[in-house]
Image (cartoon, rainbow, N blue to C red; front, side, top):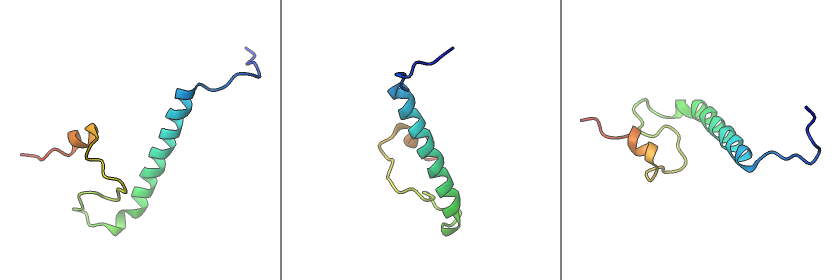
Amino acid sequence: MKIPASYTIPKHVLVNYGNFLKRNHRRAEKINHRRYFSARSKFPYRRTKMNSSRTYKYHHRRRT
């Protein structure tokens, strides 16, 4: 099937791909910088505070 020359990638696909790239880059950085932190470090290499995000709250609930 021929793709017309005017065809553009939908916005949501572009955005998702960008996020995917960012996430992988972040993970690579994390692995590279791990040796600067102790094993018990609560936040291994995080530049931004994520307290407001739902996933953060879910995964970092205090174990009781």
